[in-house]
Image (tube, rainbow, N blue to C red; front, side, top):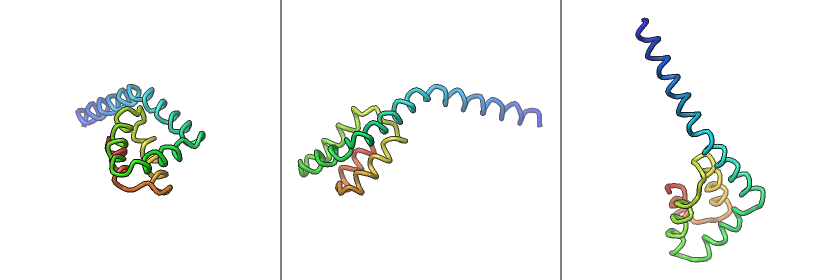
Length: 97
């Protein structure tokens, strides 16, 4: 039983250390998503991605690659773009990258 407590304590400490390590990136991603939603830039992104036809998948992939957004910010952005009428292929390319 003593070994279990030691392993569990080590696991909790490891998870906490990882959380502290990613916290700045998480905060920046959430802040950027809030700015994108507040300034209505997600509508401009949707308009830009739907304007280029088949080239939109490559454009969405490049946008996702250079974007500093984490998964907690990218998922709401992709959902709002899908609801605004963005085709599924560029949305999935953005989400995956």
